[in-house]
Image (cartoon, rainbow, N blue to C red):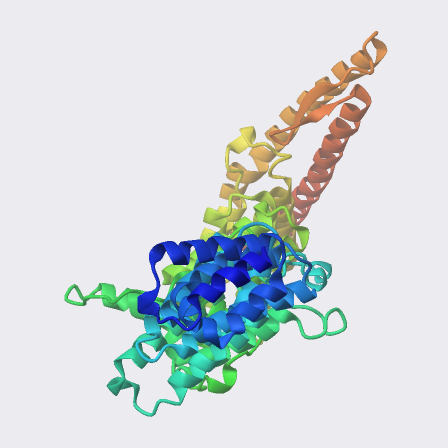
Length: 602
């Protein structure tokens, strides 16, 4: 076939493009493709490089890019045949019309799938860059088309997460990211080196295309990529290098990072002005959230970020971004939200946040997000981290803010374990308030009373599921025991003695009744289960419910363990309840009747 091509090509040598007929070029292309199929690559390369064949190559050569690329992909990476194919593509780029060559290359990138996707991109990025740089003017559209095509294709590649996956880079996403930095660099330089881009329409358009690409990379792959790795785990994390490169491009393109950081706030304000006609939005909630994460957690780009914003303002502004990250269910994204929240809070002094901050919608949403992560997330380290973050949030608020926050969480959490945790925090604040050297009066007297009524209460009276609410009930009993011991009945700083009758009516008596009912129910269940163990089907699995939750099918022996554990919980509640009532009785007997409940004016 190489001989046939040589004979055919002699017919076209030294002809001008005007002399070529369509049927001749079709025959030439078919013959070239057969040469590629038979891997007569050296002969085809020689024909492409022969100056006598420039007319036919200029006229039809760009049509060979697809067949040559397909031939290249059938050979081993790094092989001589692959290098020959790349040489042919580069030679065609020098000879053919740049616009036609550009479309030929982008077509191959767009059609690449599966295991060949990343290999095609890595092979063609350099030729694609060369073509774009050859375009004389008005190259912004072509640059934008190329960037959007390549970025949309790599978005099909899975993002490696663990250290081992990143090292292996099975689908070559890391290699693609690093190659993209080199691909984009000359176009960023072209924009940054232009003295006055307002006079250069094409440069302005190219700047916008480059910004769109950079912000798109913040969404993919950086939003889900793992950046927080120990230094000894992986040197030069490719995603970290990519993040530094993208943020560096934003700075080089003259995009003010504070402007980007403030995008959501500016958007909300612009919505209030009906006369504003928004331009095509290149910022999204996700790419701005990722930008804030890179700025404030990894300090990437912080050198270009002026320190004009106070810690409280940064925290308040970041709440929108934290909310976006925490609402995502992927571990890599949720963890970024928790890290951004932590770094934003650590900049703020303890007890410095004003209670009005809780009126901001984004703050309330972040609190709800934290509750969902710590109660519903299946990943243990994220649940623990979110609880730590909640405590950090509590620590940063002033006393009135803590009071308001506790009331809010008790109303909305609907989770016994979290409610128990909040009640423990309330106890700690009361303990601080009772100290003589404090000015804290929010957790004493009449201000404390509404909070006590929220805590010292069975939500459904005696019908309350005691097992499901055991954490809350035990925390409430421990709080009441603390109040009775710590606050003398004739001083009554906390107001607990004034409210004792309501507490007995709404909490202690229903708890007694509920314990008796629950104990009787579980003892009957134990009796029935023991009977099952004596029957012929003692090994049959049965279903059982505990704490309002249906448990997996289990044998009678397993059921007995669950039921006896429930009785142990009731014993513990009853023990603390008895101790509380004993302490109340002793205090009431020892105090003059007229002084009981006479609280100080707070």
